[in-house]
Length: 95
Image (cartoon, rainbow, N blue to C red; front, side, top):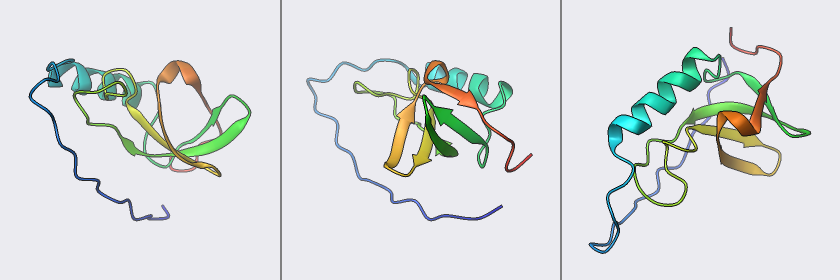
């Protein structure tokens, strides 16, 4: 499998931000994606845009948390946080 470096972005959580969804929901969403075949290295399509799963979103707060958007997909336009509903499986690149 071709390895790619990812940048780690330091985040800050304000005290006014509600703690939702809880980390167990993130874990469940990621496990569901993995069991559905969305493994790292797998080719996927977001609509008509092809991409590759490069990681999983472990964020547990904010509008794009891992509970709703567990997949990190690299496309020609950059890396996107996606839900399983937005993606379809392409040919297997890492199976």
